[in-house]
Amino acid sequence: MTGPEVTSRRRGRRTRTESAGTRDRILTVAREEFSERGYDKTSVRGIAKAAGVDPALVHHYFGTKEQIFAAAIEVAFAPALNAPDAVADGPLDGVGERLTRFIFGVWENPATRTPLLAILRSAVNNETAAGVFRRLIASQLMRRVAAQLDAPDSELRAELAAAQLVGCAMMRYVIKLEPLASVDIEQVIARVAPVVQGHLTGR
Image (cartoon, rainbow, N blue to C red; front, top):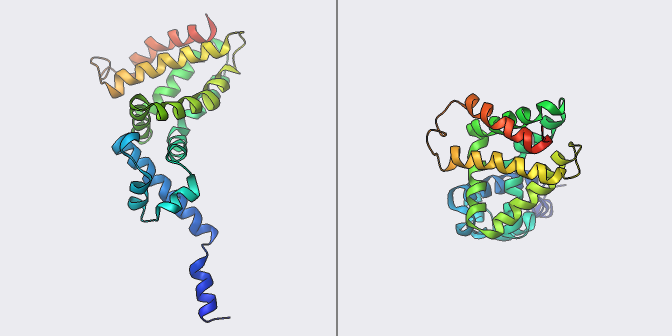
């Protein structure tokens, strides 16, 4: 069947492939916008313009600006969310080194470091962004790490370990304090891993 009716249907309805492609494009652009401008200066209208779509379509796929940010950082943060697997993959007496090596491996890779930097900068400068980041860290990372530990205060231990690693990452990759910013990563791991081990297991 051909004619105006079919043409209208084709124009009026997106296929699943088209919809997925549009959603992915919006998400990619949103991640770039948050990375370049930060949370405060990024707008739904700006994301829509950069993605070449109507702002209503951005809202349709993601909802509010806060929800778009949450979706964008979850994708960007995805490599780090495999950290609990590093904790589980071996005996507890080596968990500090495994976790430290894994986290710094994510930071040392430029492909994963760039979006992480954007997340940290937005979280530091905006409370809404910080809240989204906290919820992601708590639900998908810290609780999963804590679940691997045999201790009554496992959540506190996991959070202290995370604070140690995030603090070092901030100093090395964001603030770029010397000599930490330039020293060989193996030296950093050798110094930090025992501290992370102590937080996680107390031994």
